[in-house]
Amino acid sequence: MKIKAIITGATGMVGEGVLFECLNNGNVEKVLVIGRKTCGYSDPKLKEIIHKDFFDLSPVRSELEGYNACFFCLGVSSVRMKEAEYNNLTYNLTMTLARVLSELNPGMTFCYVSGAGTDSTEKGKRMWARVKGRTENDLKKLPFRQVFNFRPAFIRTFLPVKPTQTYYRTYKSVQWMFPVIKLLFPNSVSELQDIAMAMINVTMKGYEKNILEVKDINFAAGI
Image 1 (cartoon, rainbow, N blue to C red):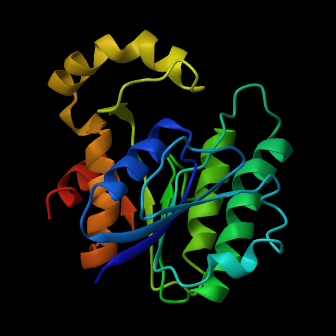
Image 2 (cartoon, rainbow, N blue to C red):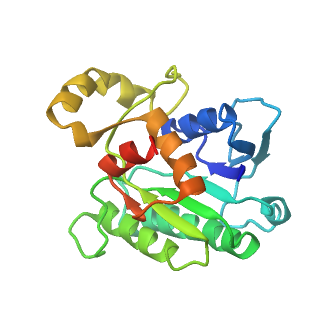
């Protein structure tokens, strides 16, 4: 099976890493990036749609058909956000696209980048974890072929970090910690390339769990 993937969040660290790996992986036949601004990449198997309003996909709906994977890497920080706003930009936005894709491509595998500590019960004290948990839970109810929720923690990138990217300052401030964290807590660190490979592999081969914690992500990267 050749993968025909839709990628969101390609201007963020995880999304860019997934895009880079897909463009350089022979098992991926074509890639559609949909985002609010250009991803900055050019490749024969890449198509890009600039679309500002993810809550209204009707103008681009016809272009989302014919894909068998979605690697959803789009996300926002919950810092200084009220729950209603974060819920809208996380749960509502994700589900809007996911519902459309499940209608157009029921044979699709949907990979959602959540995060370590996500609350599947939806009842915990951390607002972001509840919202992410609700998003994970409701994605599983959609008629996709497969849904996998990825919960990375600390991530080490293999790409040059661009100062223009929003994650640049955060990454630069903590990058020295990765070798230490990996030594002390090996199941808390993933290489960005491994997250991308895990998405490709579970799309093609499946996985026994639909929630992939760090240990699962690292394992799935090598299957």
